[in-house]
Image 1 (cartoon, helix red, strand yellow):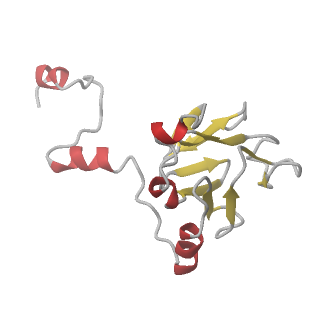
Image 2: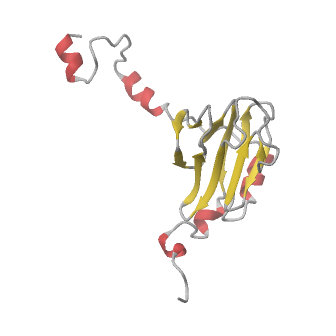
Image 3: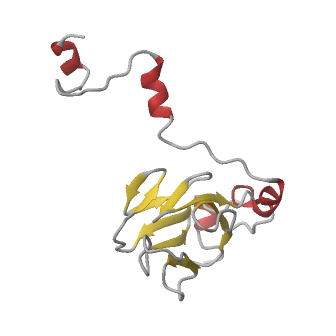
Length: 166
């Protein structure tokens, strides 16, 4: 590969790693993790969720397999025993992150944590969560599973968000 071709492709002459062929496409597709397979019990728990709720399932950390229900307008996760989701580890700030229910789904917001919050391994300040997204808080990794009833009930659509009878 020549230097002019590298600059045309947007690579700096100092780049030490390059991919050719299908590897370039595959690398982009792998940025979003493949959703972790759910056990039959977890599938049943997700299927039973009310339309306006979601479930976080712990994939890594001291409490693998733990499930956290997001059914309030705002749910705080952190190291403080007063947090709605208590994550007991020094890598987690006392009040680390909040999950907020909005018209179009759940938003995760970092609330000034020291170690940051990550969605699909990208550091975020705030992000709208999608089914299967991986949320990392300190050394804890959880997958996000919204209620499948959400779409069938019209929750999050423009029509459902409008006031009726006003």
